[in-house]
Picture 1 (cartoon, rainbow, N blue to C red):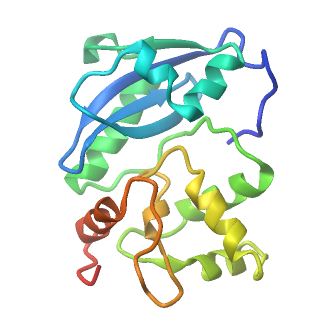
Picture 2: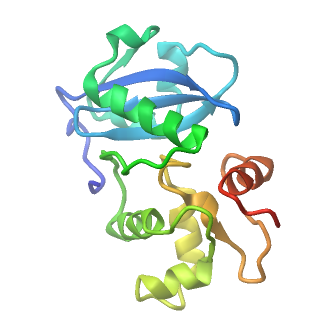
Length: 191
């Protein structure tokens, strides 16, 4: 995981993007040669270069000089994109896999939170407060919530496993029905 990069910092970087269909939604998956850069839901089953470059997280990459390549067929996927799509498909099918590599940008605080999210076991939840305590910032539950909300790789960096301190299902960029579906998929019945 990387820190924020300045303008021009992505000169020569290529981001490959494709779609993955799951029972939850159709997703765009973006990866660089270093790892997964973003996952986000899309309408329909096709993505366009114009649609990809409008995604806020990926827009930062293209403004910094990255080249965006949209792949229509799996045959054209480079290895990093194959690994990214395989990881999402494995999660959706209930198979456990080792987490893939990520190529993310964020503040040091966000990166710390995202790494902690990766340590939350499937089928379990933690509160924002518990997550704040686990990174040594017990009074930073709101800031932790902001970092969780900024996660560009939902599902694989499991921000859906963070809930309210009272056990309520709260905040999720992909919507609360999706959060409930993901938690149910992982075996949590009371969602």
